[in-house]
Length: 117
Image 1: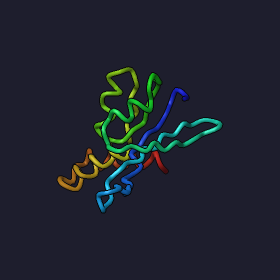
Image 2: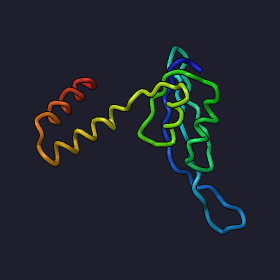
Image 3: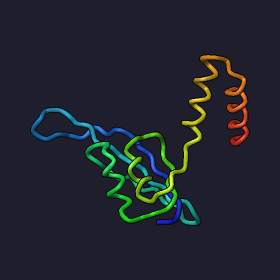
Image 4: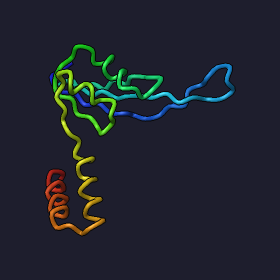
């Protein structure tokens, strides 16, 4: 893998559970490698446990962009650099502005918006 990677919980999948007469939850995690030949890999997992990300990434070390999912936390203690998610940071400022009309939060929202203009 490249030195930079993005990962996200891609969603919940309904999986047949033979003999149980119902479905059970499974998860897909998406990993994206940017660059001249970008790829996206979906990793099927039976749970949302952080060990799945650790198993998938193995000995890889680099910068990893993730959402706020706590399952990634252990990776950052093991030598992977966390790249923050602007959508999650923006949400905190949005909530603060909604609750208090804070001018600081309003300015932060405006500046974050300029990143995407």
